[in-house]
Each structure stands twice: as C-alpha cells, then as structure tokens.
Length: 286
Image (cartoon, rainbow, N blue to C red; front, side, top):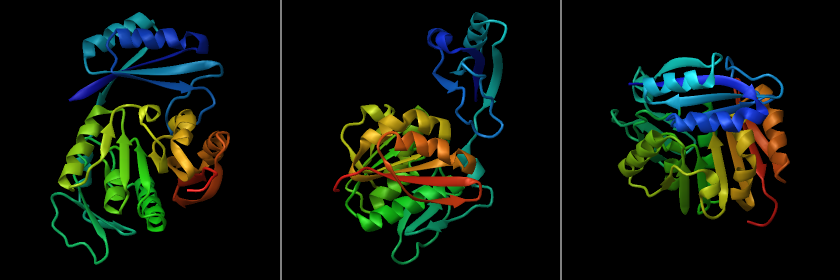
C-alpha cells in the first residue's frame, strides 16, 4: 500500500488558497513548511517569503489532478508505507530504559525486578524505544514520574503509544495522547488494550484536549514543535514541565527560543548522539 505526495512552493500570501485547493482535491493532510524553520536533514526548505506545501493523497488519480491544478511547478511522488513493526523485528529484542522494560509482542522475556513491562507492537506507527529520541523521552518520563508519581501526562504525537502507556504503568493518574495520523491512534489503542491500561486517545490537535497537565511530552520534528509551541505551553499546568525531542543539536536554540517566548523556563536537557531532548518548566506551584 502506498500514498502519494504533491509538493509545490508558493509566496506566503498564496499558501492558504493553495492549501484549500489541495484539500478540495482530496488531500488527507497538508504539511506546511515556512522559510527559516530548520527542516530534518535532506528535506527541502522554501525560499525567503515563500511556503512549501506537501499534500498527501491515498488515491493516485486525485494526486495527479491536484498536481495539475497547482501548475507546472508541482511535483508528484509515490511514498511507500514503512512498516515499523517489520523494521523492529530485524534482530531486535527487549530493552530497558529506566524502570521501563520494553519488549515486542512476539518475544517472551521476564522483566527485571522493580520494573514495569510494556509489550509493544508498533505496526504502522513510529515508536519502538530503540530510536534515540524515543529513548530520551522514555527516560525523561520515568524520571518525572519518579519525582511525581501521580502526575498527569499529555503525549503529543503518540505514534505507537509507547510513552503514554509507559506513563500510565509508571503511575500517572491521567494520560491523554493524540496523533494526527488515524493509523497511529488505532495502533496506540491496540497497544493500550494489550497492556491493560486506559488512555484518553484522540486524533484532535493539542489545543482541543481539555485541561492542563503536569507533564507535556512531544517527540516530533523541530519545525512542528516550533509551530505548536503556544498550544503545548498552554497545556502545561503551573509547576509543570514540557519535554521535547525530535530535535537535532543545531536546532536546539531555535526550538528553545519558541518555548521561552511562551513564558517557559529552560531546564537541563539531554543528548544522544546528534539528537537533543529539551525540558522547560511553567512557573507556579504544582
């Protein structure tokens, strides 16, 4: 199974109209990249004063029609789905991060004494615990809940549901999680059921999730974190923390500036190779 992308660059004042056209032609989602936001390595970035739009389509014919409607500069490409579950099965087994013992559903292994077990089948959703950003987040969630064991947690861009499930098993009183990919929401629900935990799962954006949280965690791309900074900051309760990953070392300052602009104070973070984890705190008593 594959999806198709239609990519085109526009002056910033024409981006809204082009986005509407993509949705009208059947796009299931549209990514918008603004000039000046550092993309992941190898990803295209628009020129100054311009916006790069990437529309995603389940139907090749609809994608072709949308590309034609946008004009000669539109690029059409096929994107094969990546099965993260099959990727993980290639010689990988159980791992421990802090108090969390994580094993794939197809492997039998006993968790170490004092640990909580998360049994995971990522399916078509990202989040296996083996990627440095996921491991950094998992360690941060574990450390936070060791300090505040009945805290509330919001996992933004939950993917396979790993961080949310681990938070619940580590004692979080309330765990909400969202993802804009309906496949990820379904996979996270299956994994939550497999682990016997209750999560508040939704495909709605963070701004639509009610309440505030002691811990807000987001392991997504740096440019998306910058865009979501106001919403993520508002979800943090007084005395709460915001933990961010998916950030390359050269992108740290750009992301930090966006969250400090929301009134948050930086806390010591962590690094793993080329990847960084950033932490922020909202003022006030918990």
